[in-house]
Amino acid sequence: MGSTLILILVVAAGFCFDFTNGFHDTANAMATSIATGALKPKVAVIISACLNFAGAFISISVAATIAKGIVSPKVLVGGDGLELVLAALIGAMTWNLITWYFTIPSSSSHALIGGVIGATIVATASSDVNWHNLVQTVIVPAVLSPFICGGVAALGTYMAYRLIRRLGQKEARTGYRYGQICSASLVSLAHGTNDAQKTMGVISLALIAHGDISAVNFSVPFWVKLGCALSIALGTASGGWRIINTMGNRITNVESPQGFAAESSSAAVILASSYYGYPLSTTQVVSGGVLGAGLGKKVDSVHWNVIGQMVSAWVLTMPGAGILGGVAWAIADLFGAHANAGAIVICALAAAGAFGLWTLAQRNKITPADLDRTNVSVVEEAELSGVPAALAEA
Amino acid sequence: MLILATAYINWSALWKICVAAIIGGAGVVIVFGFLLLGVKIANNAKSGGREWAGYALAGVCGLFCFAVIGAGIYAILNKPVSKKPAKKTAAVLIAPSYKSTS
Image (cartoon, rainbow over all chains, first blue to last red; front, side, top):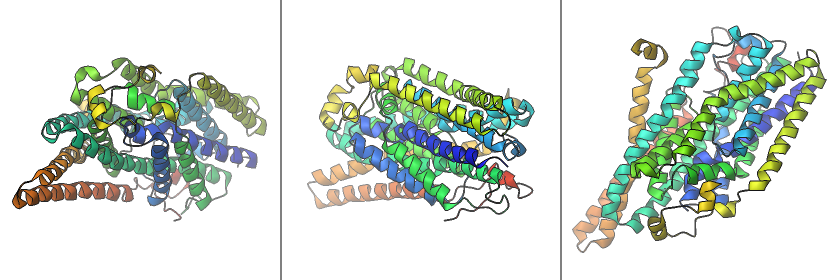
């Protein structure tokens, strides 16, 4: 059993990771609704936060927990389990903050899996990682899902614009704005059910490793559920405006029919795959949906350089978070096995890094006021069909 | 190449996901467009019959959209629990089959 101090650090790191997950992923649900002016930015994130909070409670089972079938169970609940989970969380959290600083939407779930794998490899051996399962349950769905969602969104957008010719610009765009609110809310709810519960799994794992709850017939303690739900909701409510700007304004100039198509397709792909036992990265699915919505209207409306940056970040997420998790483990291990000092040092380093990135981000800050497009009428949206140059380049 | 893909891709689940995505994604967008068209026809109708036809179209399309939202919520509430481990040990967290407290 590990020390109680390390357990407290793991729980705190888990809640912090959930917070970063929330503000990193707000964009998935709400970026297009904000970009088209369907919702005011602050209203959008508050709706999303409430739905994420509710989502953390409504699902009765955890279908997607970290590293399921990827890392040998004996490693995570063994003698070094607490330190390993802490290192993994720090790696994932730091990767989330790095990609947030560079305004790139990347998968928090993949970062967490990468962190666990990296820490496991450094702590034990690569033989404790099931590479076949990693490819089958993580890599393949990650590669296929943006294409599926993109294709569906492109089809929906193409058909929507054909209908708009008969409907008239004003009626169609106003109507699709209302539809967007509904589809974005469904994505938020789905996000809460998937992502908050991953962190619940991590914290419960630490409690088992520490011997606080039984591994047999155990249930997630209520305070863990409440803490995770609150953390992801607070993170979501805090905005993550940098990534919202990328998702809503920099991939393509999103209009309300495109936003509705992107969000509906994303919700359908995420929920269908989750139902059939393939939990996906919400970020990658929604990014694919936004790209498809852009292609469905006009091929050259997509900013391919931004897509290139995003795909690079996706490819690098697991190795990057893995390296950070492995380094965190190695630093903690310098102080000896089960040493409190090592855990404190890696937490302090992570906090310092987070503060440094936050300070740097203040130089090029994006505020809700910059993103608010509710004052753009549907007619103006149709005529201008663009975003302020400053935002597109931010 | 095909053998390699077969080893890693569950084609049975994949086609079901694609069908669900087309119905729930593109289908909803198209049907929602017809809902708006129905409302427009009803609002601009000069005869009672045309007005009712417009509302009927909007109503049917609205029902379809609500049904898809209902299916989405059903999917959230009924996520399949992953395969149960052979023994109930601490590994349940890695391959969860546990009940929630609420």
